[in-house]
Amino acid sequence: MKNRVYLDWNATAPLRVEAREAMIAAMDLVGNPSSVHAEGRAAKGLVERARAQVAAAFGAEGADIVFTSGATEAAALACAGRGLKGAPVEHDAVRAWVSEDLAVSPDGSVAVEDPAMSALQLANSETGIVQDLPRGLAVVDATQGFGKLPVAFNWMGAGMALVSAHKLGGPKGVGALVMPRGTDLKARILGGGQEMGRRSGTENVIGIAGFGAAAEAAARDLAEGGWDRVSGIRNILEKTIEARAKSTIFVGKDVDRLANTSCLIAPGWKGETQVMAMDLAGFAISAGSACSSGKVRASQVLTAMGFDAALAGSAVRISIGPDTTEDEVLRFAEAWCRGYERHLSRGA
Image (tube, rainbow, N blue to C red; front, side):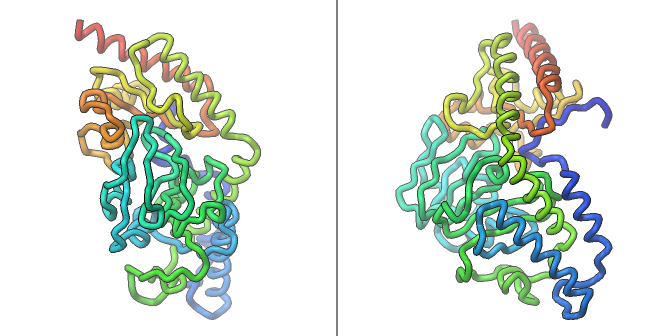
């Protein structure tokens, strides 16, 4: 769509060139990775190469990487039936399987008293707030942080971690559960015993190839400092809006956040109205997690942090990436400020 500006990278990042090329190449492989003939071995080799790429990018060398249909399936595989504790700021895919017993402070940090029986996110998709992970967590949801933060599974001391391809420029519909080698895990999808008996079903060879290539490219970008530039662009966006619309609130501004994320509250201007106005102006943003689309309600994350329903319902998320330019965020800031000014004038 010509002339549109995409500012919703936390929902899904644009497909990387490296991932697209790997997927196109994988389409030419005819074999089933479970077959023992040459064609099957070629497909299996591609899956194992991607497994090694994801492990290296996530600092999980020596760990088991179980490919799934996405982080949501990985969350079910990791959390179901374990009686884990979680917090209201967790993604719905994790909250579906945990009790919401962990306390959330006004700055978005989560207090964890029993890591071995707790699940905790590395970074929040709506606010970008990064958690200080205690060692020994049962499950870490690294979906938003993987590829954006210098973290390694082998440093975490965690039992399991969830990751997803499309958050770092891979294809949609593929993710992984990461765990120490040989971890005992009950499969939820039974059948042919693929993925080391943890997740049956023929592997999504094309998607997995794209995941591996995207993970490798994301790790390279991170190592080369690409996200430092992103942080600078995000700060320009926030300062520009703040100078013109002084009543706005930037959630998590004074704590550790993802370099690309800005959660903005415009008191009295409903988040879904902002999203529609900006869409018409040519900018793609969101009013919260993409997985909550169609649900017109105040953000669970913001209410857990102590914001009242009116403020929580007036929030939008702008999330950018390495391809976002200063000109694009300045154009967005101008369009957003004009829209907010029109909203305020109508209420006068």
